[in-house]
Amino acid sequence: MTEVALIDATPHTPSVVRLLLDKLAIRYSEVLDQPGLPTARKVQAVLLEDAVGALMVLFPQSQLLDLNRLTELTGRRLTAVPTERMERMLGKHSLHLLPGLPGLTSSPCLYEEQLLREPSLLINSGEAGLLLEISSDDFKSMLSKASAASFGEAVADIRPNLDRPHDDREEITQAVQAFTARRIQQRLEATIEIPPLAETAQKIIKLRVDPDATIDDITGVVETDPALAAQVVSWAASPYYASPGKIRSVEDAIVRVLGFDLVINLALGLALGKTLSLPKDQPQHSTPYWQQSIYTAAVIEGLTRAMPRAQRPEAGLTYLAGLLHNFGYLLLAHVFPPHFSLICRHLEVNPHLCHSYVEQHLLGISREQIGAWLMRYWDMPDELSTALRFQHDPSYDGDYAAYPNLVCLAVRLLRSRNIGSGPDEEIPDALLERLGLSRDKADDVVNKVLEAEVLLRELASQFSQG
Image 1 (cartoon, rainbow, N blue to C red):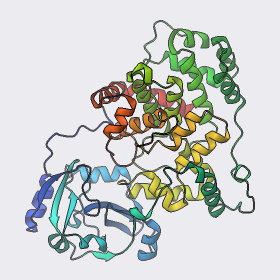
Image 2 (image 1 turned 90 degrees about the vertical axis):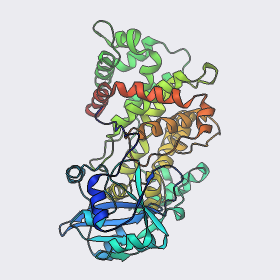
Image 3 (image 1 turned 45 degrees about the vertical axis):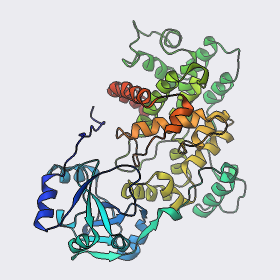
Image 4 (image 1 turned 120 degrees about the horizontal axis):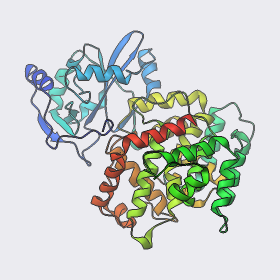
């Protein structure tokens, strides 16, 4: 699979790194990367550039790299080196990650002075999953030609609002009024220019809560929207569903292949997703929006089926939560267009952090807060707004907990297979226990989904073009 990196069970330090350290007489020991290692000792290396040239920047993973401060310090507007060029550069030396070794590149180096306050440091070896521990004195000797400065923001000082949803409205209002020209208006609903829900979406929402709704009802709604009708038929005809015979109509797609529940949530997810256009800018390394949405929904679909029957939440709603879990990303781009590019550039140079820290640092709110607010504003089910709001809290055990718990688990499972963005985060036993799932069962689900990776990507491309 092209996008799933399989890591050798026993990684070794690449030869180019060993030779360089031997040449410099630097002693080191190999350490397997794992949760719990102190982030203040882990060195994050990024290669930035502008018209002047490239610059290697080193800082501890306990900090967020602030590009604005870097501009003030250097007088340069630096951004991450494009992914393709970075991959070619590393590939020449058979490296998968950029080690924090200034001698590996011909570019000048700037390092965060906080690094040298630690007794020893952990740097990427160049091989995923393997770090090299080097004493602070030895590390300092490699920085003889580098410049020191203070430019990081302590992650501990950035506090995303993960568990105070009652503060969301006030925080979103403050952010919008601080970062847009519309500062006179007070009502949040009037301040954010959200496009009205499409008529098709409104009809589908009514059908979702109608206990007497039939296949004829959803067929009628879908058929009045030619683009949506074509989407449903092509979805059902996809090799992913391996439907017997040719799909001849929307009703055929629903009755023979997809079923009422999947179609109504699929149609709603598509209708809501198309309310806001995909941003033209996006962070390098990120999985395309609809691709990540489809992967997440498919994994959640499998996880829901794998749960004990008595514990299973509504399957259609869990699928919809997967489709829309990253909806706040679209909303941030819509509400903060001048600042969205800055968010993207910061996500590129802080791959060790969840996006919530970058967004909190730059805007004062996260995509989860604003996405959940919009779901409530549109009168979507409480289960859905809860899923979006608490998806990054693996300990959430409040109302409708299964929905955000499933999104959290699916996102972390996919991230461990290099799908999605942000750091690889551990999956707590308590999260699996609340869902009634074993770790092996969860791994089986994501592995089966990724066996159909090519077909899933094809489905995602249909959304992107729709």
